[in-house]
Length: 178
Image (cartoon, rainbow, N blue to C red; front, top):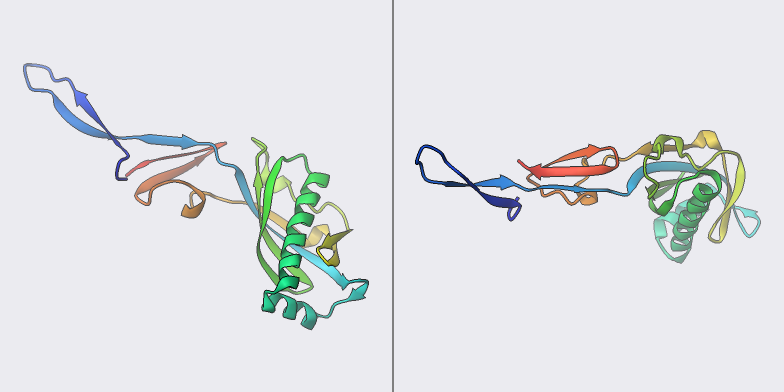
C-alpha cells in the first residue's frame, strides 16, 4: 500500500503536542461488469462440409490462422448474440478457451449496463445458426451458461494493491490498505 496513505495532523488537547498519523486512502471505482460464460456450438461446418472432432482438434491445437479466425469469429458471434438477445450494453467479449466436444467456447463478457443482473444475460435464447469466422455452427440454450465474475478474487481485474482489502459493492469496487 505504498503511497496510499495521507498524513493527518491530530490536534491534541490538554497542552500535549500535535501528533501526525497516517490514515489510509480509500479508493472507489465503478468497474465494467464482467461475467464468464460457456457456449457449446453444435454441427460445425466449413464451407458447408461437416467438420470431424479430429479436424476441430487440429485447428485448435495448431493455433494458426484458422484458429485465429475461429477465435475472432466466436467473439464476434457471441457479441452479436448479446446484442440480439439481451438489453445489455456489452463493451466486448474475449474468448478465454476453445475446446472440442462439438466446439466449446469459454468467454468473458464486459458489460457497461449498470445494475444489470448478469446471471439473466445468457445470450443464447433459442437454437440458431451462427458464423464463427470461416466456420458455422448452431447454438442451443441448454448448452450455454453465464455466471457473474468477482473482480475482487482476480487481482488482474481490479486496481487494488496486493496489500489492500477489496470489497465488491453493487456498481463499484472499494479498496483500502490493510
